[in-house]
Image (cartoon, rainbow, N blue to C red):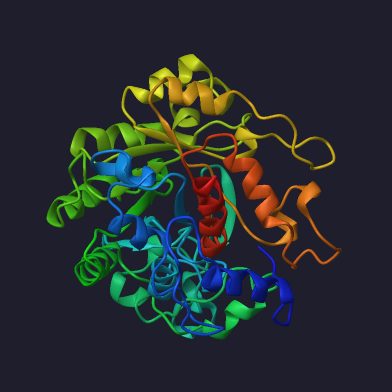
Amino acid sequence: MTQGEHASPARRTVLGAAGAAVTGVAGAAVLGASAVLAAGPAQAAEAQGGSQDRRHGHGYRSLPTPTVIAHRGASGYRPEHTLGSYQLALDLGAHVIEQDLVPTKDGHLVCRHENDITGTTDVADHPEFASRRTTKSVDGVSYTGWFTEDFTLAELKTLRAKERIPAVRQENTLYDGRWQIPTFEEVLRWAESEGRRRGRPVWLHVETKHPTYFRSLGLGLEEPLAKLLRRYGRHRADSPVFLQSFEPSSIQRLARLVHSPRVVLLSAASSRPWDFVQAGDPRTVADLVTPQGLRWIASYAQGIGPTLDLVIPRDATGKLGTPTTLVRDAHAQGLILHPYTQRNENSFLPADFRRGTDPNAYGDVFGALKTYLATGIDGIFSDNPDTALLAAADVTTR
């Protein structure tokens, strides 16, 4: 995630291409050099109900393949997990918009990637909250800052969101202070409104963050999430929502509460889900990506969200190596794969797709995406959904 101090030619080129290119799904209407797509591939695919991208009947199988999931919204262009980031992602044509959920002190679910809001809000500028700064251990890692579980919703609403990595995405700081922290219910209302306006459902990809940690505080995430899903009609097997977590027990708990499609997120092969650590389960992610482990996941989930390195590992020099058998093995169990995360900046790309020496400049993103999508993954999380949509269109055109 890195951008230079000034608008880079690479960034202008990618955004311009997103508006000007005629993709294999539909032509894009250009509103201007800085405009968003008037009609993205998702809308076009909806209009062409019989196209190969919508070859399945209903539910998540009806989404275009590859599915582009806007990671925390269009977080490459706006501060993450804001209504502005979600709206831009939808306007760019993203098929699904992601939310990460953490609780407030009074039990509301809000959209933040972490409960530590030090880097994503202006809380440090509020002297009335200076005494709330503290050090906590979350999933075995020590953090010092301000945490959502120490604030009521009313208090959080006095804060403003800001760019999480300003040294990398300096252009995004233009929008610092523009939006509040949204509640998940506000996002559901926004999705309903946009769905009515566009004549199609707005898909969401919703993650429970640190569920074991929060349950130990009496702030379980799954029950209030399920209540909201039922209230807004997103609790059925064909509902336009995915539920995801790095903790399998959270997905199992959700499976008992609602029928919405579920995805188990998978980190580095050597890591262990925190609920496994707490329960004394010795299995690692490496165990979960074996045929036996995938069969176990398929007993309560419909998909997995592996890190891209589990699909194609990087070698000692940071270049892409040989794809693993994960795609084939997961598909054999009926699981879809939504790996994470595609970002345009050199610092996040495999070494063989970096261009130049500026870590914040854009590299050969399309080359990297072509390689990843060629493995047969069903979708991909992207901070830059316009870029991923163009790469996905290349695949479907072929």
